[in-house]
Length: 390
Image (cartoon, rainbow, N blue to C red; front, top):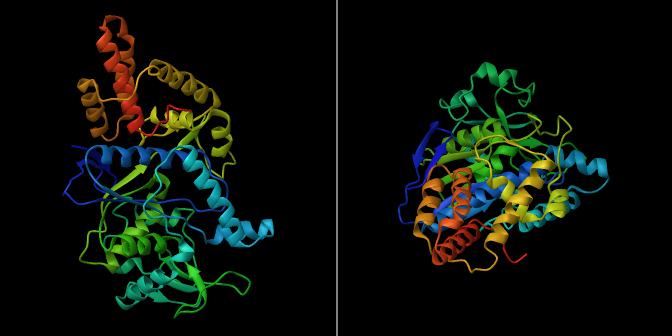
């Protein structure tokens, strides 16, 4: 059985299969600027997961959103002297092209924030009626003092929240920790009509509204980068649990680790962003995908061009090793090894190590054993989304 690390419970838990669809939601990109390597990692590692769950005999409904309106998008569009729609369309295409190059599965649903405004307004109205939301001159806010379980996901204290750099302090908020559900727009900013004034949604409300709209209830897996645990996923959990009190919003919260550059986290604030498409163009989607396979998804992953060169060489070894066979599940012991590794919280590096151990014993195998090994390795890599015809 597949065991996954649940950020909420801080423990490994078995993914329960009830015979119905496994419902998965991945926080997608905010389309303000071109995708970077970190975006690629999140997309690929959870693509491994979706593919493996399907391989294990489960049907999946997979959604990944697109945030195409927020403060940063507005700022960037003004800087480039284009509309927020033009910026969003251009960057959305860049993300989709990179996902395709990495051979990531197309989601069953890919909602955009600007196409889900009505659902967000409805959800905000419900939160106001239940006394979790309140209206001010600057917008509508979620009152965290009304929600007793706030910060259970991240495990933070209110002091840590107040010391954080991502909490916006508005003069008309009841509490500094309260977060925006709806923002009243300035005259020159994009806006939509609402009962509380023309404005735009807060960042967190969109995912809650999308999940409710698509899945009509609780979901099994909610995933994204671990930089989203707070405030984004914390606030999502609070508002969804408050609005839908009789439902368990998410059963399993999964988060991938960040990309590091010489031990330092890659981030826009540090000015050390590595653009994904540049490396796809240089190394190809297979190599980038294989690079992500080599590290456990929950741990930080060191990135450099030298490491990509190493991944290129190693993956070519696998390509050459399997070049003269068709993919087939011929060696059941290898399949079992694959299942055991993946069931252990998607432990892809463990499986890779076992694969290369097998490859190194080639001389001790019979002709049939060699053929079975090659066919099975190719079969597994195709299950994991690698293409051997390019």
